[in-house]
Length: 367
Image 1 (cartoon, rainbow, N blue to C red):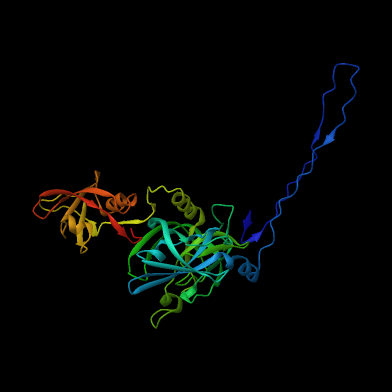
Image 2 (image 1 turned 90 degrees about the vertical axis):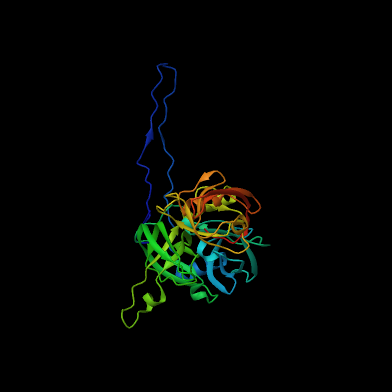
């Protein structure tokens, strides 16, 4: 048990229990001798680590990540959960990435990396460091969640400088809902069940580990204040540190599903299928269905364009699954892989229903 980030030792005391035997009715039987129960060793939590001790223990299990797509790039962090280079990070660090590289902070080596699977709704991605072997791994906290007041330290590639910076703080709340905004494209995502901390988490720390006072991972650093909010502007004073982390139990749930190779729910496993449409939810349209995924744009030379889809069409089924919203289409694609065929049905501007078969192409990690 922990309270306020300090170790509380609970000693289990043997309460003088004695075992007594009932004498036999046989007068020739010898008397029994009472025997004390064996003593139970007390449960002792080791003392919390100093910041220097924590850094020395955990830094060799952390990687800095660089993900690029065209002319844009993202710097982030991850941590090793298996010796062969399996790494947990945030989905938004690798979203749309065509090239990913990692620098292991223990051995200094640079690895090419690939995405094994992800869950955008929980902002978790599983990455494989290619050719990695015998890497030290993090220790996961034994409890599903820390307690409010527990001391924690966020470790990451702060500001993308390529150097790990510890940010100590404490847990201030659990089970938080937070609306995040991507610093790359401005897209939003609502995250549930988050841990709130008062550590000074910065851009580049995304995907890094949140450690407890004993160097065990309790969460994945995901969101923090913008530089404007942290530093203040001429119109507003600086804000106190506030950041959010995905509970490690949530991240491990995604990890287990990805390693099992089981796409389903909100988790996608394997290479990302590419359809080539941007869609939105629809409402009532004249001569059109009231529900479906409305096509906003179609990418040149994509499977969608080859099929004949165009802006304004409404996708109503995807390989037999009814599509009532844009999220339905995303979920229908989650379990698919590049090269697979799919039958698509849609309604055009004139209210005419058409259908055709596409072959999904290979795409980048995206929702």
